[in-house]
Length: 98
Image 1 (cartoon, rainbow, N blue to C red):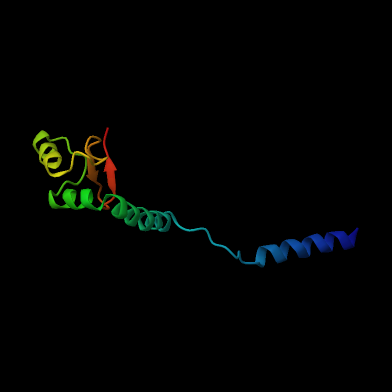
Image 2 (cartoon, rainbow, N blue to C red; image 1 turned 180 degrees about the horizontal axis):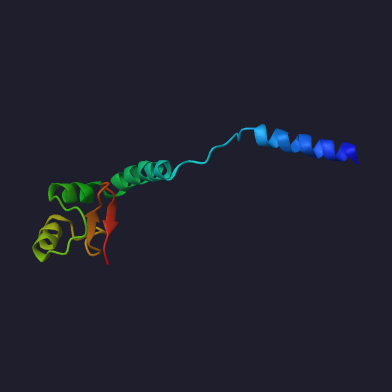
């Protein structure tokens, strides 16, 4: 019986002293990784549309009719982003509004 108790106590102290081999990423690190993946993919797929939105300084959801009209005049009607109200968020990520 003493042998079992000694073994379990030793095992617990070994586990408590052992540092984890893997440390989970922080929320901010996950967010930065997400941006590092999304932005280049969006640039490759929608580079022209992103350039137009940058040139028109359209950040945040565009509700002003004149801004929406100038965006639509600049963007090709064949673009898949022509109708869904595209905009760039505060991180420069392309988003669409409903």
